[in-house]
Image (cartoon, rainbow, N blue to C red; front, top):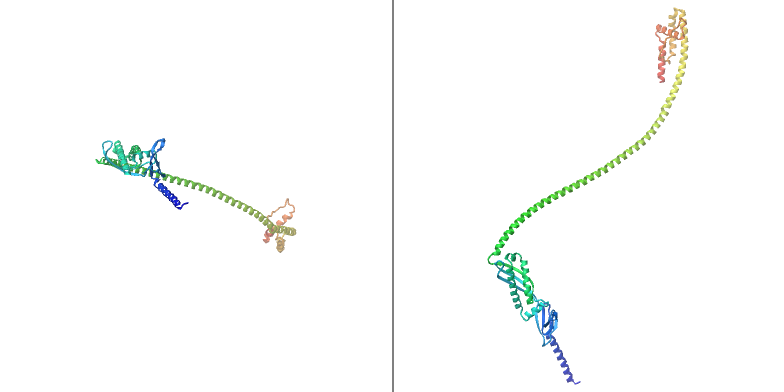
Length: 418
């Protein structure tokens, strides 16, 4: 290929690329979220198959057809408008001065956007704000004329709501949207609101004083009620505590009573068992003592008694024999004495030593009783009578009582045996 032709082709390609880039750069439009692009010059179908002479791009990018379309931008940002209405007559003929602030914007939704494009495309933002301000001030005057000063001053929310409702209809026809509207100040030049405010203030102060007194009364009543409830609650709590304490004491007393009863029963049972054991021990001790006494006292005493009885029997036999011999001697002596007459006294004197000797043999004989027996019918006296007679004669002559001596001997012998 001819180098000159190749250079021409390269130059043409470079030129074409440069032209294309320049065309794209000049005709490519980027739309930010706070604006809308309007491409005018060709016919497009809008909402509802309506044919319009423009197309809309919201947020993104689009190419303009060179020589056929023109691109315009509309800002969707918020616009703050200060409203000031002076001498607006309210219901009742009182002139008022109202200041407010409104926030409006161009909507991005159809068909309201179409209204804004038809009315404000190519217009600066100041023009849009001036039109919106005039419209809102007219609406504000109309709403003020429908309300009394008291309603406007006391019911600002109702006033704002009516104003928003009135302004929305007119702004929508213009293609604008009212985001917010705030009433800043309401005043009058004749002092009507001030007078109303004073009356209202006095009424409010009166109501406040009444409310304060009522609140104090209610507070005092509530305080008294609370104190009463607190005292009642305290008394009920104390009563419950006392009841629980009494129940506890009753249970404790029952428990202690049962414990004491059980303890006493145990002690009694132990004492009974101990007494029974001691009783058995004492029974055994008694049996032991009884046996010991039988072995140490009764058996020796019985043996002594038997020995004494044997000795007494032996002594009694000896005394009996001696008595019989003495009686025979006395009898013989008595007979002899009676026969010899005067010699009796002398004989008795001689027989004194003999009788003393005889009486000495009767020392172990105890005479409890002496009976004198007389003779019958002049017969010869018996032996007993002779003995008694001889004893009496002997006692009269010598002072010796043989019977008494024999009785004392027998009493001494009985005491020794006992």
